[in-house]
Image (cartoon, rainbow, N blue to C red; front, side, top):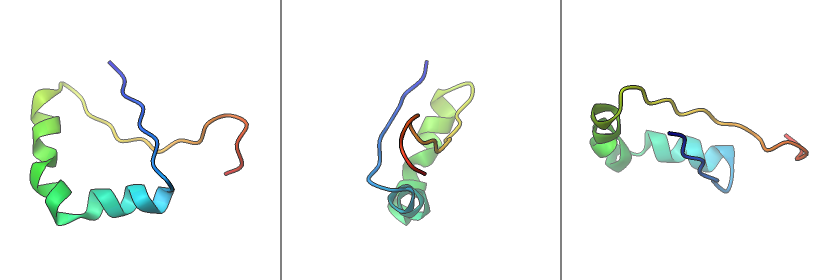
Length: 48
């Protein structure tokens, strides 16, 4: 399974994963999946 999520910016993504409230519940994702990878990407054709 793959989930694609769009964030307003890389900074918004970085702010989210550093947020203490996010970190407090992030373990649920890791515990529920065999493998969990957060991989920032850029859609093809868009400037980086």
